[in-house]
Amino acid sequence: MAVKSRKNPTVGTGTLATWLPYLAPALVFYVVFMAWPLLNSLWLSLYTGSAGTGRSFVGFDNFIKLFTVPQYAERYWGAFGHTIIFFIIHLVVQNGLGILFATLLTGKNLKGREFYQTVIFLPVTLAVLVTGYLWKLLLNPVWSGPFLQQLHLDILVRPWLGDRITALICVSLVSCWQWMGIPTMMFVAALRNISDDYFEAASIDGASPPQLFWHIKLPLIKPVAGMIAILTFVNNFNAFDVVFAMENVNGAPNYATDLIGTLFYRVGIAGQHPVGIPDAGMGAAIATITFFVLCLGVVPTLRVTQGRD
Image (cartoon, helix red, strand yellow):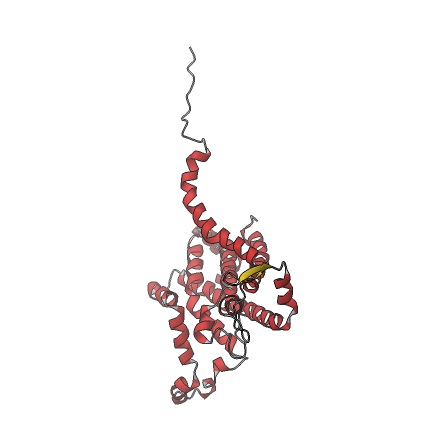
């Protein structure tokens, strides 16, 4: 007599009741803190006024004003251009040095590896306001000038943060210095995950260290490099604290360090000169455009770097 096999009803069912309790906390957190604020910002960009005085529906008028009214258009395009420069400096300096340091830190013959890792990552643990204020003092010729002159470095005695040409570069480099530890450690983890078999085979073929990097290491860590580029892109378009600490919310001098984050703060939260009254609808319009700009940058990068070769 044949005996029918009985399947375990708890294995492989994949019913909603089995996995929903595990997914619910993350889903609630995502909806409350990410999805709902995003949708509320999109809705708010179509209105003008405030909750206290009453809001009125204006459709796409906020977006039209942002690109046509000189008071808004000049400040927006200036902040947008500065943010792009801010991002490019981070992409080249921060991520470039990150992969360089990671390559050196994963070398087999390096001594004092833990010390160098600590030195590179230490600035990440400091508050942005603290590091911004310290670098503001160091770049002030009144405070650091006598010391630099004693070292015969008079060429460095200049108002770096007061010059429109150098202010944004200085702020960007300080930000790179503080956050360089994160991409470095991510690149270190990626390089350590590469199997030694690749390097042994390449060494047998007589590959040099530069060839090992360009033809083995770099292609294999491409997904990590793409993710780091995306994180850099998103974080730079939300940057605010470093400019606030080293300059002010107006992006001094004369808006030379004004970023999308500082512009959004002035327009939507603090109120922009000369009116001084916050315009939540205009601020939401700036945030909405930033969201779509981020999508235009993130989606293609994901497709290029995370796709299968």
